Length: 206
Picture 1 (tube, rainbow, N blue to C red):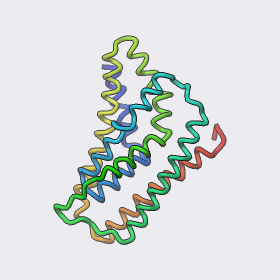
Picture 2 (cartoon, rainbow, N blue to C red; picture 1 turned 120 degrees about the horizontal axis):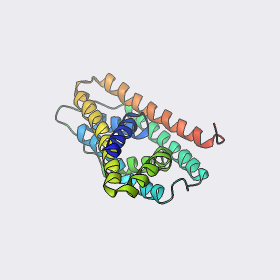
Picture 3 (tube, rainbow, N blue to C red; picture 1 turned 90 degrees about the vertical axis):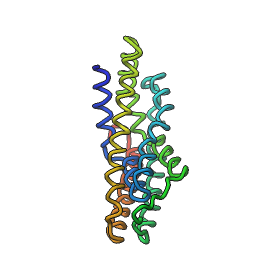
Picture 4 (cartoon, helix red, strand yellow; picture 1 turned 180 degrees about the vertical axis):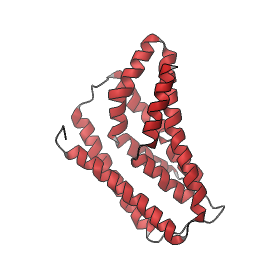
């Protein structure tokens, strides 16, 4: 029970914290509705497995320089996605009722790349998740699985809830309001990418 509650609590914090993936979920929900947002919300289930395996296998063994490279590369890619969204927002029109643009495999792939290049999952699993998992596994494997299950249940669930809220309200937007929201999503993506890039470039300890 302790590990499950810990996983639920940490998952909620990670799920609602502003970041690149959360902004991608909002943008996809604006463009294609709830189903598109849900596909992006489920990206951690596709991208986090290698992160978890590497972190659990070698807790804290990843060199700092690798995390810096991930931060810079991921940041630049997120900036690119933000700029592309801003360009689209200039002429975008709100979807009509009943119109759901399907989320393409390319959009999901973008989310996977962003999440893999984001140092936050790596840092979380190295510094927090892996020690809890290993300690729980030593006592009983079911405890460790309860921690991971609770974490991802709330991590993905909170993003799905947000996708539902954004997708339900997108048809009520005027063209101007839709463009403003889409532009704000693009600007937020670019800002998050810039922060990730700067953090990777700054000397350690800043």
